[in-house]
Image (cartoon, rainbow, N blue to C red):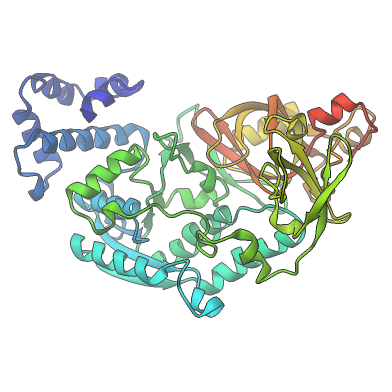
Length: 513
């Protein structure tokens, strides 16, 4: 059962030691689940849980334990009235998307004692684009969101962020694509819309200080007296960071669904005003809860891709907004021209190039929009797809401690993810001075990448990352997210990959930045 699995978790025993009364009652109820149900009913009253099936008791205990864990590990699922005495701080706005995650997040918060209001965000108007809504399904999502709020007996407000999304997210996305880069607009959406515009809407229009979403991540606030506390910081034109409240962004418990990667670039001050109720849950558990309460989106398919693209072909979508840039595919092993690339802008490192008639499995190793060349390599493990280093653009720090350590020691050991879904790997960040960059032994960019990184300079140097093990498909403008264990400490867009293993073995000419 869920609560047994939780007791076996690495931190469960330590947490329960702080709650001897709860631990004693759990031990006493191990052979008789009826008393356990009574305990959970007192602390987590739910009329619909007044059943006697063991599954219901299991659910209750699971959520009960999660609530107790929250008192030491994060702000999620605490009793609203005990958490804040001010009426406005007992009220929370939940971003309701029409999907299962936001629906369950709203349910859990409502049952935890918060006064919940739903907000449905309109970020993209597909009817202006095509006159239809085949791909983004915004109206279907709104219908589901409305049905969920009716089920939970909470109000639903609509927030129109179409203009902000266009200006802050989409136009920047197009600008970066036009330069041959591979941006990730989901991070920009979270920074500017979900934890920017939505938070402002909640405060100004609804009088609500807190916002919650269905993201699989965790928030941890550290008492200021704690020596291990990380200070939340945010980028600034002057010195790069400014100190705010002590707060941490942690990875979600479900490693396969963790979304801290997408949240790494949000303003640290926003972290003080958000809750992630699903951070301690696995996706399968969330679906079980949704099914138990017969929430409308319980069986709804998870969203895929970016809203303004949906499930359609990326290349076809891009052609509606940017002129096609044709090119040629060049084999990195022999330099031969192996065919025409219909549009350089729509191919990216690590993906299949879609060469017609190719008998071997080939992958994009790099591209140069200025020369019109797309470099391809045969086999997923080809050395042209791996590198030992990369240069980063100006980092966005969530941890003052780690930023100071990098400036003081000129290097910082941490873990990283260079794309969503990747397992964390170890690396070393180095603050390299300009003269070192141009030196014979300085950073050498891959010749398969035609980009420069003038905007990577911060203060008196550049940030270069060295991977403990060669990293694959390091792609310009994808987000490089840094971690210290489960704690997300910052992020930076990738400026360019270093020389590939293939180039090192070739022993070719230097390509210093």
